[in-house]
Amino acid sequence: MDKLQWTKSIFGSRLEIRHGGELIGSIRWENMVSSKAQAMINGKLFVLNREFFLSKLEIYDANDQSLLGMVMINLFNPRSDVVINGKRFELEIQNFWQSRWSWKFNGAEIITYTSNEFLSKDKGEIELYTAVTDEVEILILLGLFVRNQFILFMLLILIIIILIVL
Image 1 (tube, helix red, strand yellow):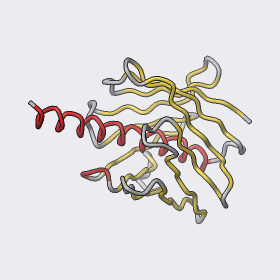
Image 2 (image 1 turned 60 degrees about the horizontal axis):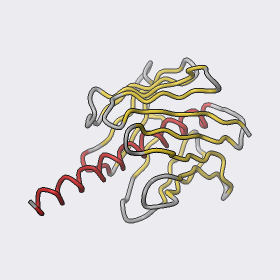
Image 3 (image 1 turned 90 degrees about the vertical axis):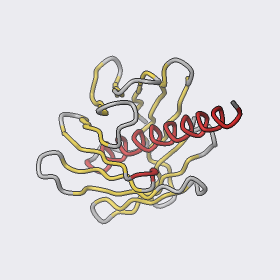
């Protein structure tokens, strides 16, 4: 098993992925609520895109703009699927607070994410239970992008509740 660490300022537009102390990847949004992001992992460049209301998240190769994967998110269903290179992977959100989520292949967890903080800085670990391949790199980025979108949605709901109460 290999471990990666990720960090993002709660209102920031950049997420970093590290292996030990070495920066190996990042996701950079245009701004905090942007639906598009530029991503890099192990020297490979990607573009991430979210449709309005979080329903569809896509990842593209930044060089030739080919679609590499797409995941449909349902806020009321903790499981979603993505097909990459003909292989089906399942994303499972394991609790309401988004502090643990994972990717599975053939029913076995291959990547797990944990989040350790929420108030000032969002950070956590990624545990890899498989070799790093092109598919795994795409899943690492998609998993972090999905979580960021859920957090934005939760903040939006909180703001709406505050406005209704006031």
